[in-house]
Image (cartoon, rainbow, N blue to C red; front, side, top):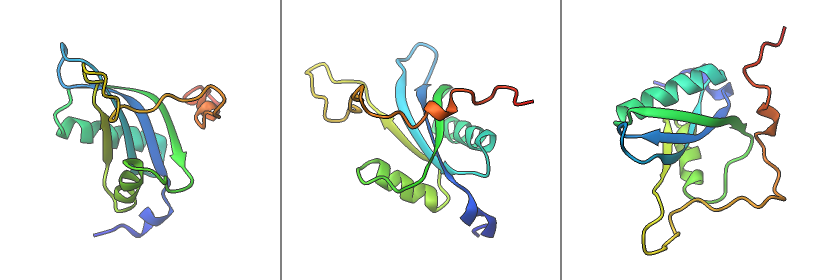
Length: 126
């Protein structure tokens, strides 16, 4: 059953790394989900990662999406988040043969980082 208050909740995106076990390589992840606030988003993301078998996670950035992404896999993840799911997009490490088709693209230095506004997130606001 869908909570009617969920309609007003933003879609958060969390960027970070996860590890299946202590001695395993890190995997880059983007997590999309609806939540009332950033603390709840982080807690729900960590719970979902734990349920998927990840032992450790580190988030580098958190923000909200104002529009649905156009490209996959984020477009499908956004749709899943709108339906109440915690969508985890995991990027595999580059293959040894140099195939980069599944790797996240490099960000052009001239692109605007939408997470710059979060530089002071978590600091005491009083």
